[in-house]
Image 1 (cartoon, rainbow, N blue to C red):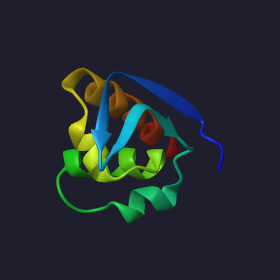
Image 2 (image 1 turned 90 degrees about the horizontal axis):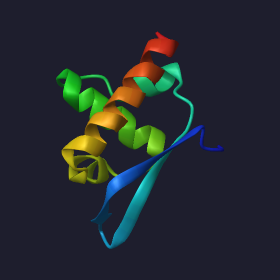
Image 3 (image 1 turned 135 degrees about the vertical axis):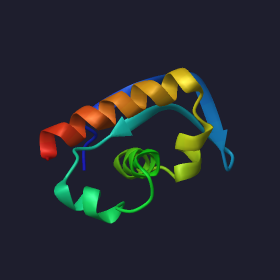
Image 4 (image 1 turned 90 degrees about the vertical axis):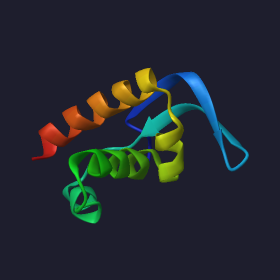
Length: 83
């Protein structure tokens, strides 16, 4: 699937030897929401961000605060469009 949105990271992260300079998010589908149900709201958002970007959850946890906030805001807006 072609990425819908690219979010450049102001502070790139390296997880498992892979450098991430940006996250490339695909479209959010209702099935994505069902796949990450459970936990508290923050865990759901982290799971959704990782799923949409096709990266391990560890990448999302490694983001600095500013990048994490931007990614979270984008995922929140995408979620609002689907629900």
